[in-house]
Figure (cartoon, rainbow, N blue to C red):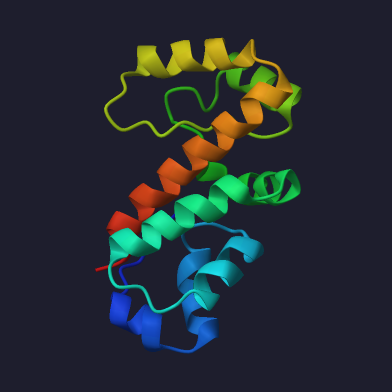
Length: 144
């Protein structure tokens, strides 16, 4: 997930294609992009991020899988090349995602071990929440 700074006014007032392009640098999910573009204008980056949270949490599982497979940088570096991360991907069909802010490598590895033990039904909402948090942090960097 890469972020290039865009003013909220440009995002709100520009063509839909430009707004979608700005969002595509944050998350490669067309459904999420369409909903956020259609919801313009936003009063603040915080409002945009809150709307994004709701959309990410409501995404269908195929959209989540597509978004996560499209962005290899979503896996925390502390575990990206680990055997445990590969086993997680094998089990759940998506990379391990965790918003890493304030977490040590040991805490990230412990979270990976704990979540690998979860069943798929319990893990999918956790994946959505972590993805929403990662996207929210990208908004802080992407929109001014």
